[in-house]
Image: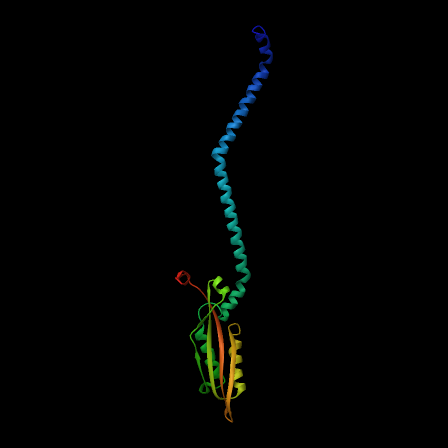
Length: 201
């Protein structure tokens, strides 16, 4: 065997060197994969998870932006009508006084605007808003029915989104006119402030 080795080795030396090179390359590749698995792979996984979370947040923000754009015009109309935002009680009273003056009924009408009453609505609570009803009581004396109806119609037309006539009672008809008691409900939505939302219940 010892005599054959000097003769055989020169013949197989290229194959042995090639095999040794392949084994060395495989060993380097295995070590590289091990290093990637234990040092780089966790960081890559974390980076991928962070990217996916950021992508989810971006898509959610885009959906919210699209929803806002879809409802912005309707919201602006509600604000302009006085349904949402600061309480427009003074506007309601000023408009009523203006209508009574135009109809020349200032001396024959009186009114009271009651303190707001909370209206419990699950949708409002979910939207973090407070819904309130404002009751306007009107009393007329020595008027004709058409005059009362005209006042109510003008008030309703100016605040059609927020007001509803709850009813009228006409009584004591006389040649000079009759008496009337009417009730108009105003609805108002007030978005809760941060302080209101965090206040203990």
